[in-house]
Length: 300
Image 1 (cartoon, rainbow, N blue to C red):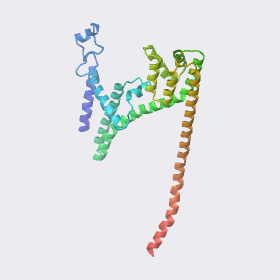
Image 2 (image 1 turned 90 degrees about the vertical axis):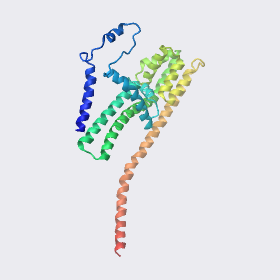
Image 3 (image 1 turned 180 degrees about the vertical axis):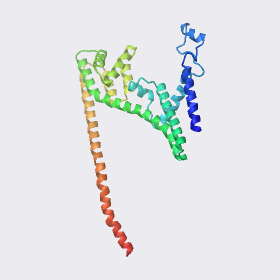
Image 4 (image 1 turned 45 degrees about the horizontal axis):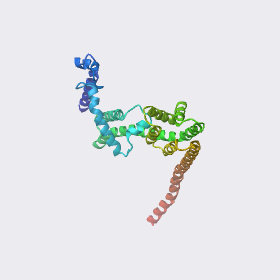
């Protein structure tokens, strides 16, 4: 009966929100229909008391606040907005948090129905009801964290080639903005996507230094910060191409060291199953005579 009551309530709320979007159910008032044609009309009009728009206006700030608190409680310190901008996600922070809380609420309802339907014990019911939404929330959060880390890794791998291209263009007499624009248009990787945003920000009124510094803050990669600090010397030195080429070689050597370190770690990890596979039979072979000796001494 409780499961039927929960299902009925969920179906009623969903049906009410769905029907509120139908024109023949919720016909807007005359003032709301004429207000878009009036001078000084606000971008967002008034929503009905029970509609998808009003529900979104109520749940959006709550979802954002709860999502940030839960994410920080589980050790995610970097802001979600920076990570979404870094990976060029079409979602904004509020939309992502609403989606995240929606999936967590759905997991909570499913966990509750499963616990009631299967008549689980109190311990397993609590673990299922509370664990399902938390796990769903963390899975979506981890997807963004993983995408952000992968974007940073890909950016650091592409950066030496992009830096060499910029160095060649600047040595050939191109201006910094023209070189950035050419690399952004001709490339197809993560660096090119970031440089397209840099050019867009420059078209919006930012200077070259400000747009590049904004890229540094969003990328969160140390190699990008070093490259941008060299590009900032564009108006102060005439040998910028050589400095950029040296920095590109330094970034490539750094990536090579990280690759060698990863290979060494994986080589060491190979020996873990080998050690476990040889240790268990060895313990058995040593334990059998030991137990036999204990049995012999105990009988005597």
